[in-house]
Image (cartoon, rainbow, N blue to C red; front, side, top):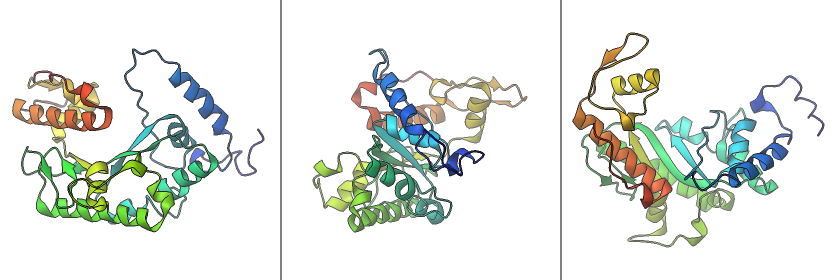
Length: 254
């Protein structure tokens, strides 16, 4: 296919053509042809929503997990962005209109959330969390979750981006709280040492133990067993919410 006039030297995220679509179809077929040994295929996309790499993933995967910030301006960029990188408005809605979108939003996950207790909790608006953040944090989660629901009620194009929303019925409250409880959750702020050791050594946190680790950079240290155990349990809850109860397996000892 001919390039869009502006595509010759443009960065990937600025390209307006559809040359990526035949590639997406071939990638989709390759994923579908994988053997049953593969439980799931996960694709980490570019941070710029309009990049063709992100579009490839959205055209191939069944579900999308959206990492979220508590910053209102960052959150609002799901809906409006001056660079054309609003995930919902500029990317997913046009892809759906063109018949290219396969992925639907399965979870909206607030990241780097502060925690007061290693105990599951449910916010006032029914968002379920595998730990207990401060009240002001839970209030912000509810505010942004309800803001998303309002957008869905304002424009059907937003509502239809969410997975199986057509089948959603109120459970234990109204449809708004059911929406918040179905789609919104959070992941706690990880200890800096564990995060850095994991990144520098290529060790998944879910396999780390309380032993002392040393990174090639010279960084060394250890994270306590109780902290690792709680992190692993919370990660497992998030995975089960996304992939199913078959991932309810014994955790690796810390």
